[in-house]
Image (cartoon, rainbow, N blue to C red; front, side):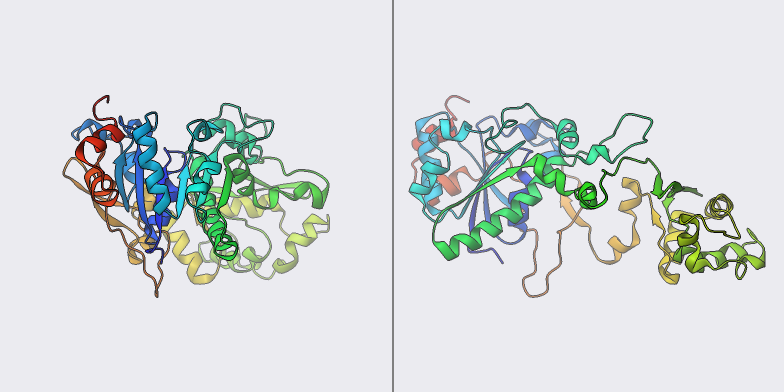
Length: 408
């Protein structure tokens, strides 16, 4: 799909997924690291038995389908080598602080002079300019400033961010979309394009309808923990089951079918089936109209039923009978999730310590332009000779100067 195109990846953990997505789609991605390696090579978890520069599973996870070189961009030979690569590239992706690349003479204005068809993508916390552009930031502060933390957590306790850091992954995915959109515009205009990606802005989009709540209803949605606010009533949506938790809303159309499960297991008597007009139940209790079985009774009956069954049993029956019951999955649960297994999502990857391991697969399965993993994460400087020597024609001495081998 993207096999004719070359991507220069100068990012650290804040943007490595972007180039990996383009690489998965077939682009020739060249990962460019400083002489000592990307800072993401220092991020846990680690493979203790592997060489020091290859121990990071963080780096391994987000750098497949890339060739890797080192360049010392603090030196003139290193900058010249990058410029030579830019002349032949289609995309450049970086995650430096605002203005940092420009201070080295490697910003967008300089790069588009070398290559008027370049798509230059910059990923930062708050964008290249504006009142927050110079703020320090990490996953926690960006999850807060982007808005999602206002929706997460119990209302009587401090707000939470999602357990697994997501901010830079969200920003990276948005950057990949931005890169492709900008490339389409470049094809039309034959002009270089600059894509300014703000991680904060990317997190705003994860709020979904929470973004527009105030404009529509006059007030923001506030975090409700494991309860759903329906008018003046709060309805629990997270229930304990035999081996963990599931999410279910036991009102309205759900109860039309679910009440038969309750009767079948002896949780409630037979008359519950016809003793209530279940399709209108939710509307009537929201309008404070009479209902046969109070919400508290339906909730308690639901709790008693769900405690008897496992997440998998509830999910599978729900799928068969069109009732939405979603498992709250742990990482271990996902590795055994039968849908992912049956669709062949997991891939076998060779780790740097010699072991093989199952890893998440490609993000889409396409029929006419199938994606594949052509190579796993490169070792530090693995393709210096191949790219700097064969592609750019640099001598051994020039490669040493450009990569900082003599000073690293």
